[in-house]
Image 1 (cartoon, one colour):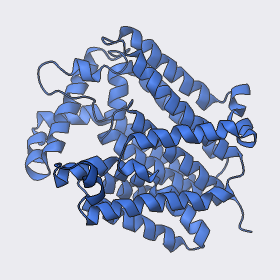
Image 2 (cartoon, helix red, strand yellow):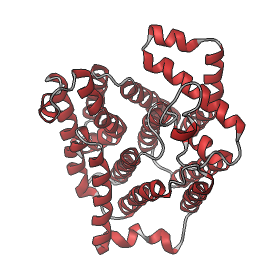
Image 3 (cartoon, helix red, strand yellow):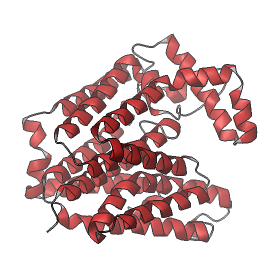
Length: 371
């Protein structure tokens, strides 16, 4: 996992290897595949979403079925590994998981202090800023994993402050890099944790509904900001990237209004964006990309899956600390998903999968009584 700091593909390798190890061990394989015999509602909706994405290849200008085939194994690997962790004995994995997280954290600290010395050995000629941009996927993964890792560390040491100390270190590291999304994700995760810790189940539901509402309104808000020239203010007072993204989100919003129901086809953002105006490889917003490419049908299936998964989790009646950690993790991932990466990027799917596995592990360990 620490190698993600140097290569995004390492996340895919880690996720696929984890799934293969699960399938190779009978004690893990049986619980991982139990849903195949009796499918749950979240699994059914997830499969329906993926099948709709495959169908959308049919009206895609590029007909990129190969990209769909690349994304699905990563998603399936995350599901297999996550389901195994949800049902098999996992106590022994807590310490190695924290160790892997701390190795990634240490590597990113060293690279920050040395201005990317280690990665610079293989990328001679790249500027300091460019080296930090290359390291940003590792920082994104760190920011998504920090709350499960903090929960595991607190459980292993018996000290809640140890977990919060880890969060504070990661927040400080994020502020020192060039990636705005990292400290924002961690800070928003801390707010979600505090809200849910104080209000329990109602707060958890409120956080999830809030994320969904923000995601659904993102295009309309961007269009409003565009009409009032807020992209110019962002460019002048924050940085060029934020002004540029308002332009992207506004253009995507306009494109969606032209074909809202079925979308333009799977993974077509990079193609239909090559017309007049701003161009982009992906909309830098997960829900806007789903709506653009898979239409409102895809949005409903995706949000339905999320609601079913949340309901299934709540039915287990998790303790407030477990609920709070889950909410903080979802919030951190959502921040990146709403402002940074494309939906079908293999490394980002793997990063979300690794986060899902880490959150499942932390939840299981936290639910086990102390010896």
